[in-house]
Length: 175
Image (cartoon, rainbow, N blue to C red; front, side):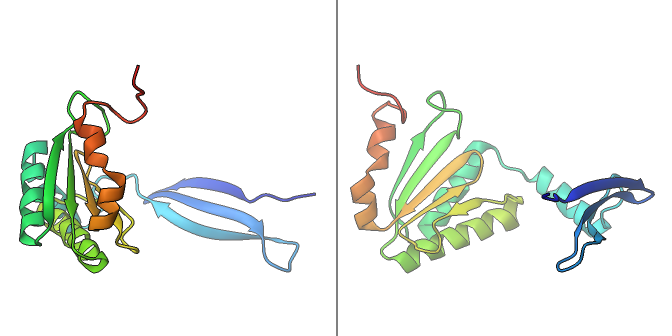
């Protein structure tokens, strides 16, 4: 017989506590472990965190302002061959796509790191980043703007700007 962990959630005064019951290694009894406590109280967050969230919400940029800040950040970090593509009306994944090149894997990774940090500190935007470890092709998803950073050889090989600028969206075939 296979025993699966059982999750329990109990409502307590400060919030909801989630517990997992599963057999302890090497023992046949069940152990009660607290995994985490989720607060249901709106005032449970420290004042500093709520103030930071409020200021970030107030300074949340429009999609065009975000695009402009991304382009200026790429310029500051010496990204080359920067191309911006307006995706509005073509797809729902984002409003804009930015494609840029770094001279080396190290520069590509550094540009992506600095861009993510700037957006986090200035606007409170947490970017999702893929490919930073290798530095050949790094993708940053900021929600409204998707940023592709390439090494020159990798950009030439994939040529994704040609796909999006041609008016076709990925998955569409020619008739």
